[in-house]
Image (cartoon, rainbow, N blue to C red; front, side, top):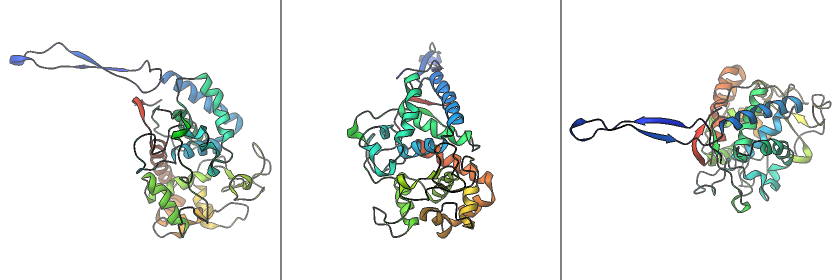
Length: 308
């Protein structure tokens, strides 16, 4: 991987015999990524999102790459996570990834333009930028992830969350399933509920997930390909409307999956969901921390991580 021009140099002093000062030596800390290419890629992603309103699918791309992580899965890359492996077969063909080839295709021209940016970084950057462009919180992302390049290192199928019964691991309730999936990643109840709030963006399409309506008054005119069912009326705006709408369940045109309802039905999840429905700033603060944590699950760094 090409190195950043911003590698840091630190003078380190030592002492010889009788307290004499040795000549300073310089320690070079190698940056994990090409900062210039990362900055340019970020700008191109922003332009892409503004032109195509593709925030939701790019968020899903980053999440589904990172969300395969298993804290008990072993050494990198066997544990899954943010490795860029979602672009490879058989992983892109997993049922939970239906429709995500379109997101990968959107990223390919940017990857070709900035070859020093890894796929793993590019997908996580796209997910973060998608949140920010939609009005969400600023995310303290770091870059320099290594890529998985061999299909043998793809994550196994079944590591991503399902929307409702039947749950592949046998969970008896949506809340149990969420804790099984996200607990395997090392995430707690607050983080589960905060991350659920990302459904304030986007829509479900029955031909991909098996959930949602073919079309609603909120999605019949797009933008993008018309159709699907959204969780919120303004489904390209990142705010706390998801929690308000799931709590009320008063609009049949809006989607509430079994795992959405669980954030209010479950006794331990409910306090967080109630808080986020009332306090958007609290939601943004907790979401920002949870998103960054998710984006680094299973990552191996090629040097010192950098921010742009």
